Image (tube, rainbow, N blue to C red; front, side, top):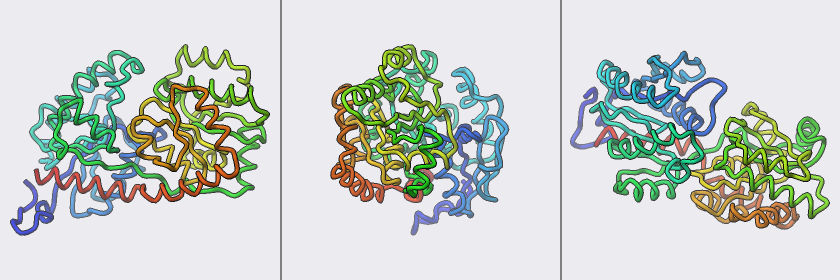
Length: 390
């Protein structure tokens, strides 16, 4: 080991640790979800711990924006991990060689993938097990790989971190992992998500929603995100009311399906649905803060970052009462059954009522105090230290 051990104080166990990190998902212009977690936590951790050396392991040419501090040493390890066969080659053949060469004390993997062939201590951040519950929403070769290897990763890991108590329980039960092996490390929210002035709202509405108030959904347009029931509920709202509102769907259509297209084609008010595609982080923050309400009715979430992003902007939230969302939102959002289109529609109308809107905003302001990337980074660092001491 590269640190000297003290019997009196375990915090001195690794004075100069070599920490290898799987940073293959840190790709410029594509920071979202798991890569957001990695970027926000790692940039805080490496700056807060200059006594340690961090090797960032990329699978392609990297952007300097991810080299957060002088104690970060980037390494590019080919090939790019674009297929399960390449996943296996990268993690089982290439990574063990690199970990041995740099004499790593620990391997940290923010996307949960580990090296079964390495004896180095490993920390897996397993955000959720959506692929176990909804394998049909992934390409079969990807789903099959995840379902075969993640149980092995979970048992191989020296420690596991996950982003909610729900996910912790899910991992424990499905993979038969002891609870004390798993730390809950909640996600945070970027400081760019703040309320905006009425002038900015009008500007955003003019640019994106034809000068009209709107509901917003933010995230990949994926079947697991329940886009079908969301647009059905919006269509029902428009049919039953005189509301002028639009629905903005902000995110990539990478997972757009025939079922989603059919539901959209069948809408009476499809002209009121606006697809923005991917937008920059700053534009995303302005879009969120300018919305009348955020609707996030996923079937399955390990956390649900858009919930707290919206609440940070003083925007009322409607979200599912399932998986982690009820845990993250608590009583600060309108919770709905994601399978009940009428319930979602009623909640969308209710969120616009002045008294209810004020209540949701105030409760949201209290709720977001529980979450920050500084807290997330601190808790993840504690998990890394525990892994070093295992």
